Figure 1: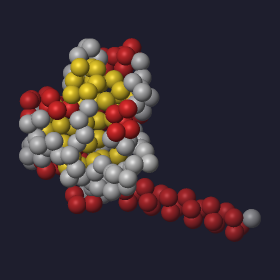
Figure 2: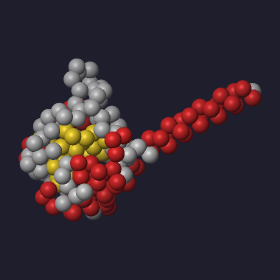
Figure 3: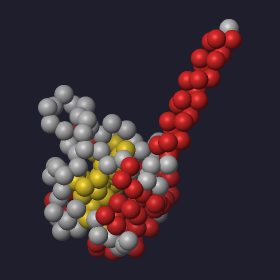
Figure 4: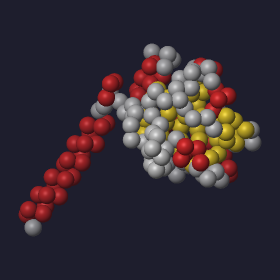
Length: 185
């Protein structure tokens, strides 16, 4: 019994140390992922330094929007869901930076296959004014090989993926990524 308790305590401590270590990653250790994102069975992976695949989705306002429409601007492409707690936590920072950088930064929030009514309630509650797109059937999420929520892609003005961030993004990380793309700093 004592041995089992020690084993369980060791596992819990190891997981805690791992989580703590991830929480303190900064600068060059930030989660800029360039490999292993494929979950579709395809032999290609989408990652850093790859062209961002174009797509077209309908916005909450009913407008057809293509990723290509934002060429020439830095794009924060965020995949999220209304039921995702970390998504809710990072949205206010995205809204703040969207307002701060005006036309230099476009935030494009792609919702995971939820009803327009649920998405609109979420958007209204958080006061989001950037483009929110509906990915019915989650086709764009498959195209971008999204493995969890939230997932964010930072795309430069030339349409190249420069950062992939999986999970909750801190404001410090957000500002570092934007500075790397020539905004703020």
